[in-house]
Image 1 (cartoon, rainbow, N blue to C red):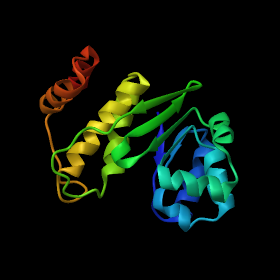
Image 2: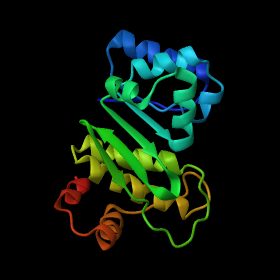
Image 3: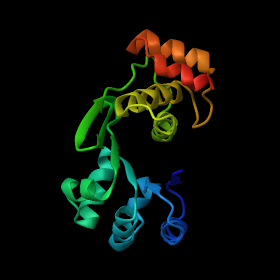
Image 4: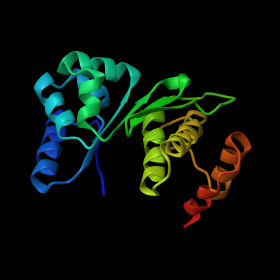
Length: 182
């Protein structure tokens, strides 16, 4: 339903943008750390064709600087924008509104590597399920917390039941979460 173009070889990323355009496939554009390796025109083309944009706060500033796009320009192009803010949570811009989701509290931060990817994965799972923007962000935030608590980008693990229980302990009951079991 939604192609994710995430950071890898810049030439490959540009090819994915072209292919998605040719095949009329919507994509989420996440140029991430490759922004510094890509030229402004390629970044601009990636954003202009994107269904959604996903960046962290620093990357967002760089993207705007390199492309000359203001936030207003970007919001007129994409259907939704997610800007992660590290320990300060995330902002989601969609449907003409801004939604703020605080970072899920973590007792012991071990390794921040891969946290943005974990957030994106959780967020997109909620998006795929048709959840509200805020619930998508909360799922992403808890997914990121699991990653922060482990060493390495893919060392974290949890069952759906553990995830739902931890979610509800902090955020409270949400009947939509039971759909994650399907």
